[in-house]
Image 1 (tube, rainbow, N blue to C red):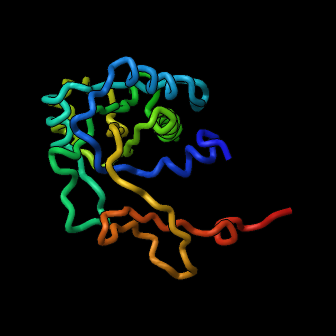
Image 2: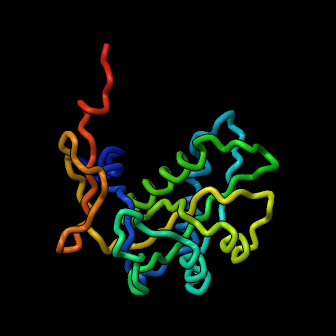
Length: 195
């Protein structure tokens, strides 16, 4: 099987929360990843999404301070300094275009993350955001709604997809070796009917 088929990219595209902080993020690569989002489908083709890119260490530290990491890992407060992302893409919704962004930001974010995986990088979509603080740090206009932050970098963690047993726990977890496990429901459980 080819390594970069869409299915393989989707399988490898798990939320990564530990990165190699010594890796330098290239601004042209961030722009290329935004191109994946820009060319993605948009409801009524309104294209209301705008982006803020960061690869600057000091700015990244400020962005990091606004984010919540891994709600199911109660004992873990987020990546330590040596494991922090080296790039961010902040997805905004332009309120002068529409007040309802539907699923545009989810589609764009998935496209961006698949592009990152193809390039050997990984990322995490984050919606647990201190909106007020991030707005101040990035001088985001009130006419822009903060929708998602995508943390990006060279992955340091291994993520494994697990088959979820009927009645099993859907919460992701880390084992004693630091391997991140993500339980997924079976096709039989999620396909309601076939014709």
